[in-house]
Amino acid sequence: MKLQDTMLKELTEAPGVSGMEDAVRNIILDAIKDHVTDIRIDALGNILAVKKGIGKSQLRVLVAAHMDEVGFMVHGVDSDGMLKIRPVGGIDDRILPALRVEVGKKRIPGVIPWKPIHLSRDQSVQKIDNLRVDIGATSKSAAEGKVSIGDRVVFASETIELSDTVIRGKAFDDRAGCAELIKIIKGDPFPFDLLVAFTVQEEVGLRGASVLGESLKPDAAIVLETTACHEVPQDEDEPDVTTVTKLGHGPVISYMDRTTIAHPGLRKHFVATAESLKMPHQFRSPQYAGGTDAGTIHISTSGIPALTVSLPCRYLHSPFSILNLDDFAGGVKLVRQALMELKPEHLER
Ligand SMILES: [Zn+2]
Image (cartoon, rainbow, N blue to C red; front, side, top):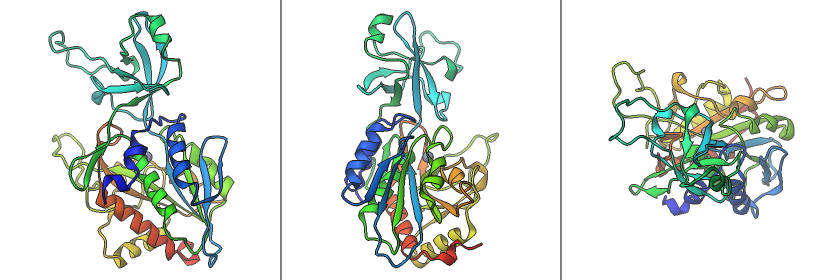
């Protein structure tokens, strides 16, 4: 699969920090509008729609992916025109100095300041609470003419191919999941009507997904995500990462993360499907995982069988994360085939 066949370039280069997913939502609406019915945007901003099936099964199956990405929000302007920012979602202070960013809907370019080596004896990292963005404004009023309090700040990063199969860009978490879901929507119909949701505000606490159980009442939910992988040698005092996922080793079927223990029937069905397809797949180790939208979906209403299927991704929550397109294609193939063969007995305990 080539980058241009995935929609990933357009989806990942769009800004979509939590609560301001508009640009991503518009791209997705445009991509799916001719392939779904009952399309609506709920009060939180989630896209909900139905992909009509061929009517052999009455199962209500939801597939979800989140549209938002981590970034920052402007919360003030200094007297010299520097923007004060706060993080939105989980961001590591240590990667930030000297990064390029874009501010607001007009995508005003800026940079996160750092002290040049000529002046810095202290090599400690600037605390995330004390961060600024330099947009080249010469005064407070000049900055306020371009930017408003509440504007989101997003990493500036082009999505490019590093090789035939490996791409680099921002926000694969979770535009890769969104792109998988778009491919699934555009593919063959399932035996049942497929409920689809593109959610908001996952990165600030799985908020968009928390209303899906109530509004869609699914019998089962599959969450398409990305998950950490890291093959770089560690310092001795760092935790062992040999059990996390590996790039290029296929989609990741979750057993447990911080918010969810996978439904055993769904998990077994997905593993059996991957085995029957003889396709590479891997499992997500419990100890290093974050949460996913499955965390709120599975405990909504009276409980919903849920499973997360992820793509391994290096350098998550940075402007330069790395994804393998064979993993991406494998994720689409696995989820599509498992849904085709999903039966009510897979949802039993
Ligand atoms: Zn995510």
